[in-house]
Length: 225
Ligand code: SAM
Image (tube, rainbow, N blue to C red; front, side, top):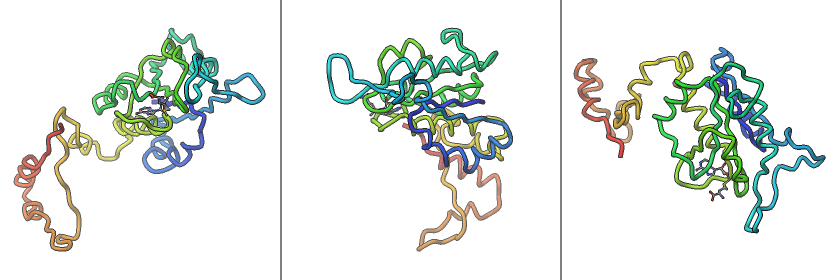
């Protein structure tokens, strides 16, 4: 999977890319995370990415021209007439609070169907609305407003990358995780010490009896709302 993230704050992603499982996955060439500065697609000497909204209103909007140039630089999808990713199945995702809410189901779909995800991270008051003609879908991280799309892009990269073969060491853990099935959340888990400030681990978990442990876990699975 190749991720291309278009942002005006590329350094937000420095430690995100270079730590832990995502770093290992890149080292093993299972994923690539490319972060691009939207200002690289501006034409003026001040590298202007924003402008005032027509009709007035608070705040600034990201301008359409650099956004479309950036999309076209990476995306092969015919609608975008682009160049760099020949033969790949790519998806251009506009991050907005009003988009369709991101879920585990969506993460699975992205991981299965595409080998390139392109994220457009907004800032300020958002984008010139004509950007909607150049993207494949709008995705929201949740029903709240963030300062920018960067955190949303990071969440989607993490949630999808860990579903790709080889990224997580123990694939079994993916099957038992929260949301692996439509309604089930993960059962509670404990590690040493056996008793902490009077709070005891269930004795069933200490028996070594795999059948009983599995039954206990099944019983303690929570249901998502
Ligand atoms: N004026 C916009 C509105 O009312 O919908 C909010 C703009 S927000 C301050 C700036 C950018 O952050 C958005 O363009 C979007 O890219 C990103 N953003 C904010 N909340 C988000 C969310 N819940 N999910 C995904 N992206 C979000």
